[in-house]
Length: 511
Image (cartoon, rainbow, N blue to C red; front, top):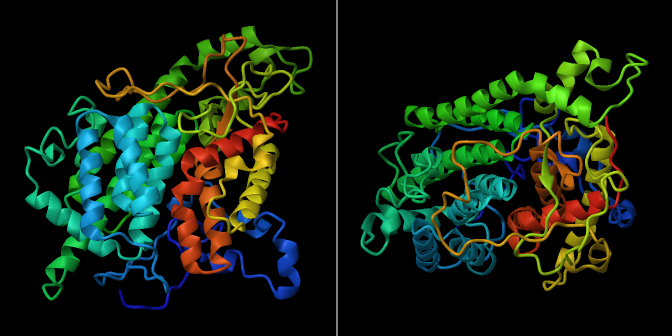
């Protein structure tokens, strides 16, 4: 791969507030001078980055040239790359497991590819996202879909890898590699309508969404179409993952869908799948709004609270009409927050499981707001603590070091729920409901709900990955990209566990 200048703006990660152009990491977090480097090494990412992150950074205008190949990113130093045929053969084995309704086995194989064979392979991220979805981890699926976007735009050598995969899929024996045939190319073999679309296919085929000049050689053209296919597929799966997260994450899902339609490679063939998903989200919002009266009554009965707006009144009646609207589904959509159970993931061998959970009243890791909308200042405090930990860990050069193994993290109990038992194989019908979103508002009648933590796409996915990229880019662009795609030390479940433990150790109040 030839060497060229890299401008440092990892796409779709950060953008300046109110700006229509992507802001390079170098502009957000410039390298400190020698006199200040020692001081900044012990602090989290600068407040400038915190202020510059949008609630949904993918809504910005991505700079794309009409000239073929202009989106290709070249790093000065090459990342370790596996032989294309070796990586493709490993992907074929993992795809086979997923096509046979064995998401747990496929998940392990995709993870091995990303940790041992080819860090950052976009197809491995893309299909591991499907594994997380059907196994019931939509928050982790969002990490992988987002990283697939970063990888396909920035990973050195990605053209060769994608071309080799496309050639393999074209020449594959359908009796052995059943994942290249319908319906096995879809997770669940057609049982789930939202996963039985080309944008959710196990096999990206590289459809010609954008015409290329006749002078472009065949290898480059195939790789270009594959990159566009993966880019659209990653946006669709990211929106689907956020929809499954429920609550205010619905708003982030709709923003991602709008962002997908603005991509230059968006084609009319993609419109139906994105429109159907968008309609599902709107129907869900409408359904919640029609049920809010009953939910308001339940909340008032379950938990009364005094309001400064109407002294002497309690419950929902104490709120003004505007406050009622802002505290319902409209408020959730504005906040983009939902809730996730704080749990130990099945792959976590570092966090001890608690035998009992501390009561929510004494250790409230969720907001006091009856709809679960967290206080902005409290969330900002969590963000800064997580950034500070990530910054410290990222600067350690020990390749065997694992963030969750650090004493400061192991000593935080976290009060994590016990890990789920994952099924060895399908059918998947009992594991994933393809027609409904995740829990939106929880059960207001439940007096002792499970301990939940506020979750949003911005705070739990965008900001940690942006932090990794920004801090790594202080050394080199290559280092920043490696950190953003590093699943050995910074996989989604690791970042989620780290944040959950920090949240369990602080007090989060209502807004």
